[in-house]
Image 1 (tube, one colour):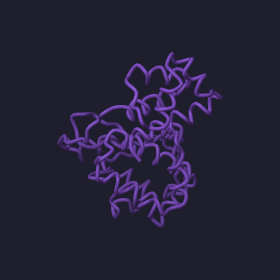
Image 2: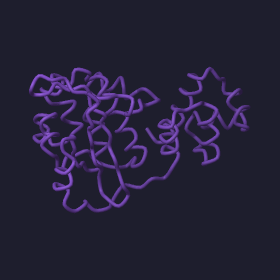
Image 3: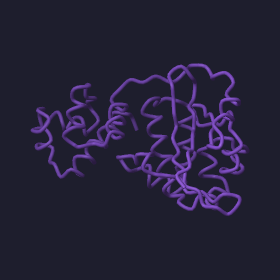
Image 4: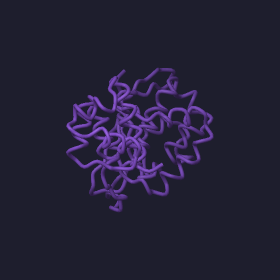
Length: 231
């Protein structure tokens, strides 16, 4: 499905959530009903002004607004270089769990706390594949379906920026046979990952809650995956 189609599905679902007809949305944004219909059909990609008007009229959250703009943009695949001294940097972030991931979510480095919280992840070594395919992940993560929403939100965000990235497309295709993934993926409005903390069963029997975030800078290839303890 193209970004134009994904954008159309997002606008339609958000419009219905807001209780607006196509005509009402057109009236609020100052555009024609026909224009709204074309956007929802995926035959027109709106410009920046239209995207801003839609986000305001549909009362999208900040994360949903950014996702909407990504779907309507022309982001390129990240081709920058890997930062130097990644392992040293990750170690300095202890006691927080930290890993460096490629644009396709392969882990190229992680600190001891990350390996403790996500046992066996270095064998994958793809973080998304570990979450869905590891026999240990569901035992480690009591709120696995919520962390799945986190993963899908991140994947859709990444694909909005790099729709032709081969690794991302390969991951999504490989996970489609998984029922939970397929059902959650079909939702036109992705879950904001920041609203889904990870609950983890630590090796010492303690239950940990982590705020998991992926931080990216244009100068580097990949992202910092950082988990900060909330409890």
